[in-house]
Image (cartoon, rainbow over all chains, first blue to last red; front, side, top):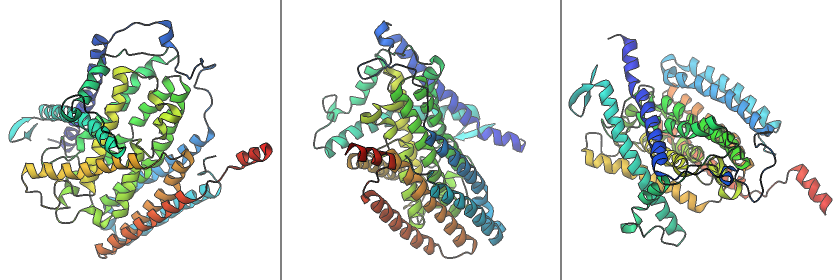
Length: 124
Length: 374
């Protein structure tokens, strides 16, 4: 068997887990469809609120803060993706690989420090 | 393409399917047990009894709850986006279930040993946040919307310390294979060399699972349940199932990576019975700590929560990774790692304590408003 086949064979359980998870949810939903009462009245379809009906759709404006954190997250998640292969192989390469990663993390830490100084990490 | 299933030679597909069936039963039973245990333990902490009427010690409470939930009407608000609303429970539950593939329960009792197991775990465990945001956005309800956004913001912030603290162990272990990591801890578990990584892993896991004190996305008093406020009946129970299944996975992975799983302290040649006791005790300890913290600590504010991840946990875990690299690349003694890790824990606790005791800073705009009012 070729190496690629072996690699894919390893991930058969992952594919099956997706299918089994899907079946679990759909079975539960079908069971509820069979067993649960079902009567759609006008009042039941309204949005849950405290007392009165909401005036507009809920999906309107979103705070700017979420966007800033999302950008920071993308930067540091890409960093984590770079650190993963390095963490497994840097001992074989030696001190050079280590100090390169120190510089890489230092640059990112500088970025984090800048964001901190600018107040991007402060939730207002 | 045959593999070994408990001594039998079977097809790879059949093998995976059988093991997944076992997990389905195991997960359902354990989740029901966890819900019962949480209610009983919380009851003790709050000086009441907890569920007691259904079965001996209220053991059948979760079964009764499940029957009730299946028989409850499944409502969908008129304004909700049908596709997003209907698909969100799938996207919340399926990624959590996929996480079970790599969890090393006992020797030979995992679904599959993946060479990149840890990477797979951190990748798959963060997918379900898409489901939370979909539930929040699709419900067309302000509480749900705010809850979904909070869940997203919190999850992405605590994802980084979680991933990097697991990576700190992977550096020492030299592999991402979870089974291999457990086997290496036959004599000394990694919590001895990486205490700070464990502390950060535990805190970040609490936040990833939306457990108290990091439960602002689902806080009842603020957003009345958050993203699943519009869900009812069996659809709502998918969120609960995912939450407790996630708790189970997080506890077993934490027990395997940091506390030595089935290997420590008696070695992996032990009989299955003792392995069950060991893994159960370690995972149970983590789960009990989660319940204990829920009973002890009040909920954080969102500014405290985001600041804690970005200003305290992330820098500390980056330092931990650099120290690990320094010690490993120059071949210094592992004892240095233990000492540095303990110092890190002391630093983490003292910084957290100082941040918690600092008087609240009123934002400039609110202060100005207060001045006008006075």
